[in-house]
Length: 284
Image (cartoon, rainbow, N blue to C red; front, side):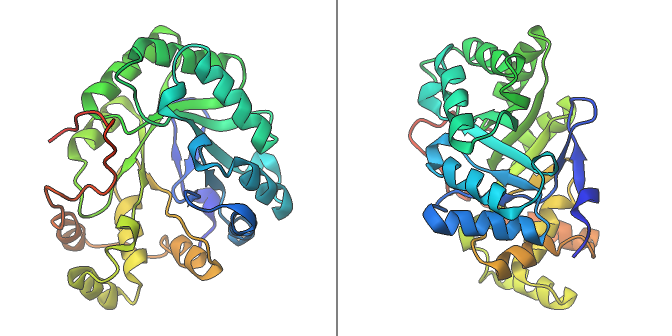
């Protein structure tokens, strides 16, 4: 494994950086979540990703404290659920998250999903206000298609703030070319959730062939594909120490261009796995 302190990406806010690989915690709950978080930090993880909707912020905070790692060495992300992104509601949700985490501030606060019933201008104003109140060092969005990201960046700028990240589903079976282009245009870091396709990629023959050639696991090849792209970080979920260790061990090798292209070519029109009824119309 490599020193993760060097494996970071620059955020738009001067001096701010986000680890290239973080720990996704969706569906990690109870004692298992505490153990997973504490264990991951002991292995070298320095980014923890949670959300109000995950109902595990309390356990994530407990795991952080149990690890013994200093708070200022860990990048903590949480998210405000789509029903709570109106003015006032968003700030209250952020405060509640901090209370559950037992933190004074998170490193990144995200709008989890946009909401068609709440004007985007109002949500972004509330998000910027949460940062002004000191609830978060950085702010961002999740599940925003390209045009909506353009709007969010513009609206945040009107309040003197910058959108730091856009967290979206991304894996070899789902192209996010237009969102990636928008992120790069604005200097926004793209954070991949479900980066391993929720485990569905592990039996892919093309990926297995590439993995065998490099002497790596399929998950390591896919995560290397993520972090080798410009401006992309990933937050794979991993509850066991073995999987956590494997997911960190992706910085000591690189993929040649032909492998990168072959992996990207696995994208399918129906590759999306997360598609709630309230999601915005996505880029084609």
